[in-house]
Amino acid sequence: MSTTTAPTAVSAIATDLTGDYAIDPTHSRVGFSARHAMVTKVRGSFTEFEGSGHLDASDPSKSSVSMTIQAASIDTRNADRDGHLRSNDFFDMEKYPEIKFVSTSVEQTADDEFTVTGDLTIKDVTKPVSVEFEYSGSAVDPYGNTRIGFEGKTVVNRKDWGVNWNAALEAGGVLVGEKVTLEFEISAIRQAN
Image (tube, rainbow, N blue to C red; front, side, top):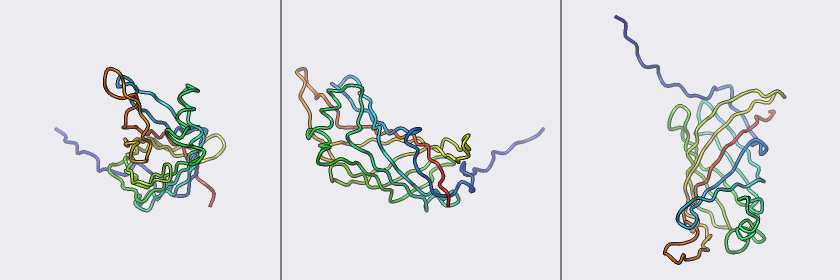
């Protein structure tokens, strides 16, 4: 009779992946979803963004990330809705063209899971948020670039950033939900030293 023991937990990220990274916007997605008319969700994304970070695989608490999103790049696959979202009812993108996130801490919560806490700035209002990320792997692409991937999401209340517009529905409720799920699918390329 043989017995087996559970393997000791080891970080999913190899220490040789430590370094500075740039987000690859052509292979990444910054998306969101929000309730519409109390019955369904509208999904969308921002198509123009850039970001960078430092990964310390041996001590994730020394890692950091920052991202800048162009508010005008919002895309929900409906031109009229996108125009309304760009207006002063929502993002007021002419006055506030950028949405920014700058991390303040990174905590490893499991072998391949991390909580990234930071300051999210929308319409010149800055509030702390925490995003739960899962490490999805690393690879060397055909061009010799070392890539790492992370997927994450968090739920925020848009009114905390002054995105307050709404319309009452005849049957009760409102047209746009207050809670918005932010979604991140990130592919980042290690930069040369």
